[in-house]
Length: 233
Image 1 (cartoon, rainbow, N blue to C red):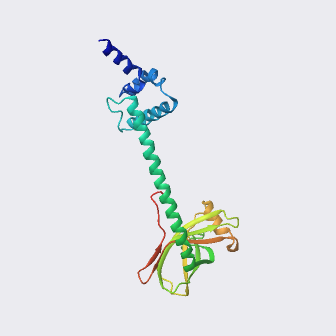
Image 2: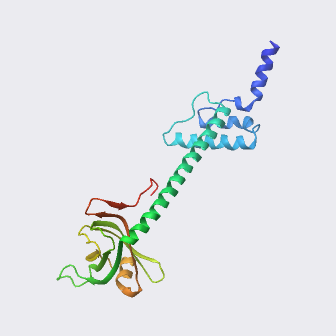
Image 3: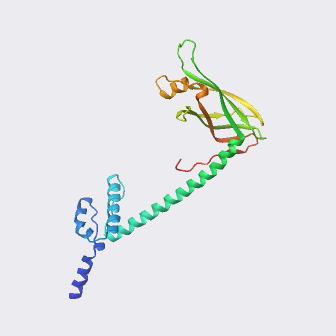
């Protein structure tokens, strides 16, 4: 009998053997046991309880019946290790894709050059006496030995200080012959109440920094050069 009592007392003295109530309202009962834990275990248990409490509040899984303080600490440690491993893998993938894209961008720069030739405001309809569109003419030069079927990417307008004015998405499928130049006329809606539109319209062309950032270039032979994207993009 004395041996049984001794074992019972040892079990009660071990804070990690204490079971966590499934009802968050009763977690305060754990306070005496938590005080016996070292600082690292206290931190892990607190993180576990917060994570489970938030999850249960939003319809997720709560704490399994019979879960002890020790179980919770181990589970939280594994959760953190898995989280760190996932973040490390994501960072490595992102770095790999960025390195590959840097090489692709350099290749694209050697193939295609873009320049803005003109920019002006126009009324879409003759009966409207105000500017409704900003029209611009672009020139694209294909430096490669292959005919380009088309490309798409982002047109970037910046002021003379490099501050962004406006970005536009461009898809071009009229093609550019090898070692030749093609011209493109396009437009974007003008809203006089949008600061970016008024700045784009009113900034002199020689004070605009223009850049075209292609995401894919397709050739008439069926090949293409394309930037990769990670899940985080």
